[in-house]
Length: 86
Image (cartoon, rainbow, N blue to C red; front, top):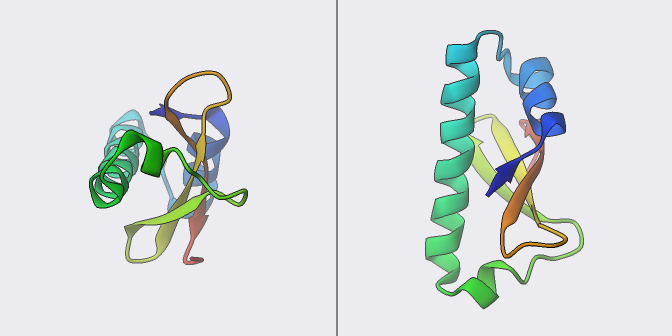
C-alpha cells in the first residue's frame, strides 16, 4: 500500500496532523484500515477490484480514507482522507 502526499496533506488539513508523530499515527491508522479491507475482501483479486470512486474505509469515528488501485503495481493507494464523510 502507498500513501500519497495528497492523503498526508489532507490528513493535516482535515484531521489536525501536525507533527511527525501525528503523521506516523495517521499512516498506521490508514494501513490498519486497508488491512481490514483486505481481510474482509479475502483475496487479492477481490481487494484490487476497486470501484471507480475507490473504497471508502473508516479510519476513525470521524474520518475516512479513499483507497484506489495503483496504476502499475499490485497494490492499493491511499488517495485522500476525508473528515466525517463516508
